[in-house]
Every structure is written in structure tokens, then in C-alpha cells.
Length: 315
Length: 126
Image (tube, rainbow over all chains, first blue to last red):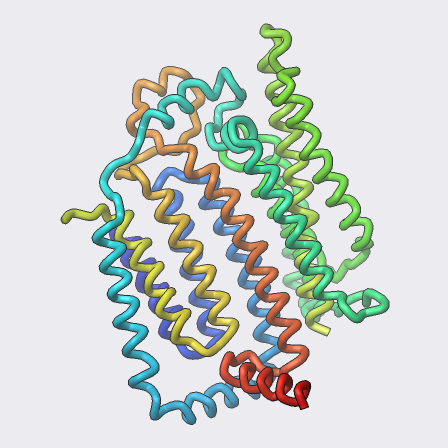
């Protein structure tokens, strides 16, 4: 089964690479991400699979907004085709040397890559000790909130840096931040009715993922993505647009400071393990609090990115 | 030379997208191909030690540890979970820089943009 999925995976990737029109590239990218997340699930990684599925929806929105702007009414496509006709004579020298170069690199990699073995000592150590050391029943959450919490800190820092860079470049030269453009699908009564039912369920699902991140698949990243999806649905269909963006940015920075402080207090100083009898209780509190903070962080970050792409770049 | 199937296909995808990256002239496609390369790296790491019938590393009871051989490795999963979020942040920055370039030069083609940039530099020198 997994071999068949991998072959479909490569075929959809080849569709992306050798397709000429940009709209089709984006649609094929959605198909590719779907197959990717199914393969992740069959490899025993439900957290990563759900993250990939959520991320692909965001990436598709980004690229569709881009292409809608660059290729409005097919002008850009015609220009692109004209440029390709100009360079038609050079087609041999353009495609064959890169192909040979890539094949040579591929052969080298295949020959030298270490394959067929896996170190299992560290895995066994983690699997046997994580319930005592960190708590919870999900080993992935235990690793990224307990053993390797530095990774999570710097990942959150990188998301803050990305949001700052995006907002800085986006609002460069704008004296006032505009209110943004209204979505144009508000007249559809069917979509409105469906979203009115689905929106609370999405919010509930996000809260469930955050609160249950340490005992089942899910966690802060996924919960944050789901919460951001709630705001996107709200904007796209119901056309509600009342969140002050500067306050959201301020809140993101405050949440990041809390993400930095909480592991220092709980894990590095060892306050969780002071009383051994009630250690699991405090461990669970720590895990839920960190999941909640990371969820808020990711939700704020993705909401700001979404605001920038949908509301400002579409102007 | 026997290579594992979960090692072969991600490397193949990495080099297919590498080929696309050095032959295309469209910047949006370049950003999509960078995402493909990132996906191949994630798949390579998740495939370390992967077999059929492998189960997620969610253990409700200590008794399950008897079957520890069939539980997936949790360490690459935790690392790749953060790598995915970083990847979308990198993509957002890429698209933002593309928007800033598009505002100035009104094109998404590498060759046309290079010509325009050269023209700008020549006028500055004059």
C-alpha cells in the first residue's frame, strides 16, 4: 500500500514540475500535499500528517492570492508564453545540461547515502522514560515540550521573526494600515448557512486539540492552525472583520515572552519535580499550559500572515 | 546495492525539484519547488527505520512497551513538526519579497526582471 502511495506521490510531484501553467501547479500542489499527509499517517506520524494537511490549505491560499494578483485576466500568462516562444531556439542548451547535472548528483547521493539501518537505543530510552520524565502519553509532545524544549523556543522565535519581517515589508510606505478588502462570496446563502454551523465546531475542535495534545495526537501547533482557520472562515464567508491587528501583534509578543518564561520556571529549575507524589499533576498542568501558549502563538502568527495576504495584498 | 524504499523516493523527489528549480524561469514556481524540496527532506527523516504495520508513538499503558519494535521513532517526528512550521514561515517571507519585487518591476519572470534590474543600475551609473 505504501509503495503505491509513494509512486502516486512521485507522479504528482512530476506533474507539478513539468506543468506549464501556474494555476495548475497550485492545484497539483494541493493533491501532492494530500498524498504526503496520507503517507505520513502510514509511517506512524499522525501529528506531522495533520500539520501537513493544515499547512497545505494555508499555502494554497497564499499562492492563489499571489496568482490572482499577478495573472489578472490572463495577461501575464500570454506574456509568459511569448517569452517562451522567444527562447525556443535555446531549448536544447537550456534543458539538457541541467538534466545531466541533476542525474549525476542523484547518482552520487544514491551511492553514498547511509541506508538500511536505524539507531534504536535513543528511541527505546525515550519510549521507556518519557511518561516518568515529562508526563502525558504522547511521546512526540513529550519530546518537543520536555526533552527538546529549546527547539520549540527557537521555532517560536523564528515565527515571530517571520511575522515581523512580513509586516515590515508589507506595510512599507503605507502611512495608515487600510481596513482591507471585503470578501466577495458573501451573497451565497448556502455557504453562509454552512459556515454558521461549521464555525463553532472548528473552534471546539481547536480547543480539543490544544487540551488533549499531551495524551493523543494533536498539540499546540495543530490547535493554533485550527483556530486561525476559524478566523479565515469568519472573514471569507460571514465578512466579519473586527479584530484590531496591532493588538494581535502585541499579544503575540506577550505570548512569546510567556513561552520563554514557563519552561525556565518549570523544567530548568526543576520546580515540577520538587514533591514527587504530586509530580504528574504539575506535569500535566505544565504540558497543557505550554500547549495553550503555543496554540495562541501560532494562531496569532497565522492570523497576521493571513490578514496581510488576503486583506492588504489583494487591494 | 540495496537502498530502502523510504530513502530512495525522497531523494528522487529532491532532485526532481532541484531540476525544476534550475530550469524554470517563473518565480512563483520556484517558491513551490522550494516547498517540494522541504517536503522531501521531511519525508526522508520520517522514513528512518520505517516498516509496514508501524504504529504511532502514543502509549496509553506501559504494557505496550513489549511491542516497542513496532512503535515509530518519536524524535524525528518532533523535529519535523517544528520544521513544517518553519517551512511555512520561510514560504511567507519568500512570497512577501516576491510581492515587493512585483510592485517595483511588474513581472514574475527571472530573465525579464534581471534585464530591468540591469537597466536600473546602468541609469544609476549614468
